[in-house]
Image 1 (spheres, rainbow, N blue to C red):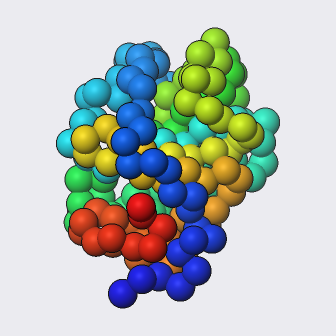
Image 2 (image 1 turned 135 degrees about the horizontal axis):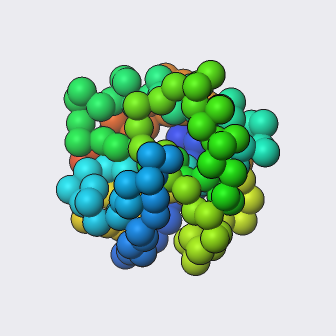
Amino acid sequence: MQPANAERLLDPMPASMQAQNFSLPSVSGEVQTLKQFKGNYILVNFWSADCLICVAELSVLQDLYEQLRSEYDFEIIAIHAGSKLTQVNDLLKTNPVTYQVLMDNDLKMGHWGIPQLPTTYIVTPDGNFAYRAVGTRVWNAPSMVDLLRELMNGKKTSTLQ
């Protein structure tokens, strides 16, 4: 079953577009790479502590993560744009998350084509882009969760070319 209005939820990307690897520190200082998560579906969310809608998405993404993590090989990586580690850590105290939060201190991830914050990509287990969302989304809405389940179950939807 295709979720209602799936085409409004996420923008499909060419199936052959490969996500470029990165090497970024986590909020605890441990360096993480995209390659470490290969074999998983990965939601990569670019955000900033200065962006109120981005901060609001943290708990919504946490809810999505809790819904899908036990069913699928699914990871979320939230990449903060900028070098405000103290501010990010303060935000995470009031908005705790269990997914990865990385710091793009030097804004070197611009090569991913991030037109504004928040911008989110869905990366397939083989490292290709599946979808992109520019702007905020209600990630834990039933229609969004259904769409992501369909993707991870290998079902084609009208938004997947």
